[in-house]
Length: 324
Ligand code: AQP
Image 1 (tube, rainbow, N blue to C red):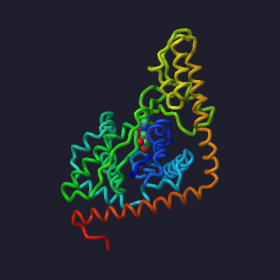
Image 2 (cartoon, protein in one colour; image 1 turned 180 degrees about the vertical axis):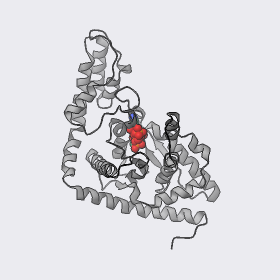
Image 3 (cartoon, rainbow, N blue to C red; image 1 turned 90 degrees about the vertical axis):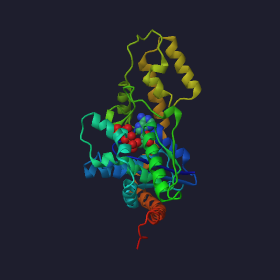
């Protein structure tokens, strides 16, 4: 399996990013090829402050390593360190039909809100297709919200192959985990940085407790039975708990006599226990910024070698001269 996935350094990673995507990165690393990149070129469509972008990229690398990415099992790199990806984006853009991009949700959502969208956001799925196709990847671990973009990637690859030859691009498949494809935020909607409903992964215990206490619940009185399945707290608890722990908490909901505060306490404890080791590892890595930078540079070298090979193949297929 050749795995590829990217994550945008647009702010601090949250539980949705972890359970939807990052945990899959870690489970799938060690495969024939596992490439993971920090999508700084994509982030440029939203982060306009150079220092913030640099800091976000540094934080993203620390987070991913602390959460369990191992440089000897996975190639971790910055997207912009492989400039070939922008060349491939152009080659793909020349065969991309407008209607394909017009229906993509990142652009459509922004337009629906009356916000100005730039060409970068509009063509984001083409850059994403290049990100995937440039490494001959066949498996892309993502959350549900990205499945549409993988379908666009497949469409573009098929169209290009039918014009220039079947061996140009490998067709990728999305890899989505059923139980965490769409992690809810503190308001019960999809957890998303732009909805302001996230629970960040590396939050201080005090702030984490405060955020968990803010999770929206209904007004069922303490003594009344409650439905765990419609409760955002319980749905988040599912991400951490064993089957027995889950069954025990579900029984407490149904029996009545338990307030939501208690369920929130159980969620907080479970999260602290689950992410505790990553906090320690992150604190250690923070003291070694040069080592982290070396990992990114080495990762880019490996990724770039593969990217050059694929771009060369595609240039030849569509009639461009070989690179001098
Ligand atoms: N709530 C979620 N549930 C499951 N998976 C999720 N992902 C994001 N939110 C959830 C997955 O995380 C990966 C990285 O996504 P990204 O870099 O595109 O980040 P994002 O989608 O920009 O994250 P946000 O918070 O949702 O940002 P905005 O608000 O800017 O769109 C992807 O695989 C994604 O599916």
